[in-house]
Length: 293
Length: 141
Image (tube, rainbow over all chains, first blue to last red; front, side, top):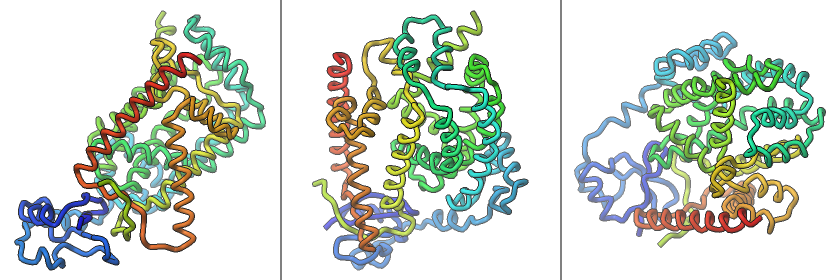
């Protein structure tokens, strides 16, 4: 019968009794690992299984040492307030590895954090809406100015799609209300991508990492929303794209204790799949090319 | 053999019965707001420049057709996204039943390392078939 093995909130897989025995001998499995097989009502440590009683465990206290590290270095976790919010943002921008060296990173604790970011963005979004009659028409106008026949279809599509002003205001409200949950949605994508890179990271921590890093990027780039003419807006977006990616990947990686390149790799892969990357990069290069020429 | 088992969750295990239904519902809210606001994509630049569809081509049109409950058209625009959406829907229904029954046994795939590699091969094959379909359908649309 197959045995399911888990350690530190991650599943290690399904193995036969022989595989677990040899794994315990080689140090692949620890006696403190949890295991379950059909018929059992709960997960039990391998040390308590009669089949593995005679096997000498490989000494390892790494897991215990890791779980004993309960102190936090994150200002927001020490005392949630507006001051600690900005301290955390500052840490994410300037010294992410020192700021997020250790912490609990629980989703519930960071909902208020994400809402502060959403509320800070509201005045900028409102200003943007007051100066933007129809976002689709603005983008169409901008693309037309690039004089490329390649955009003809996109321009036609955008011109045929009009946005009601009331709906745009509804967008600002919904974005603010659902902000932490939209980030959580993208957090799940990041978590899935990291699994592909064989990084077994807690989902909750991944979502929180994204909440912190995107808050840092959003707070810094909020001023871009004040730029009413769309040509300037796109230019600033294009110019700030690379610094934003670096800030975001560094802060996310610092929270998750993984390489920033892996975080970037995950987003790049998702970009390839969804093609957002192609559109974003295409626009950025288009704007830069136009600005230079 | 790849099969499903019903087992208790281990301490700290991701609550898949909570996470994926929330993702599914959030995605629907996001899509609803996006289409209500008159949102549209710029079209795929990769497709525009190369004439070859990427794996995500047709996803927005698929989502739009799903919001109009035209399932066959949605499937034709992007079978991959449609299948993911269907799986999300089925998992949400299962999760609703799970929470209503206050069950403690959770449905999970039982995969050893061989099964995992077989499943990966099937997935890549499915993606390739999906892409071949896109090459046929989206280029002749």
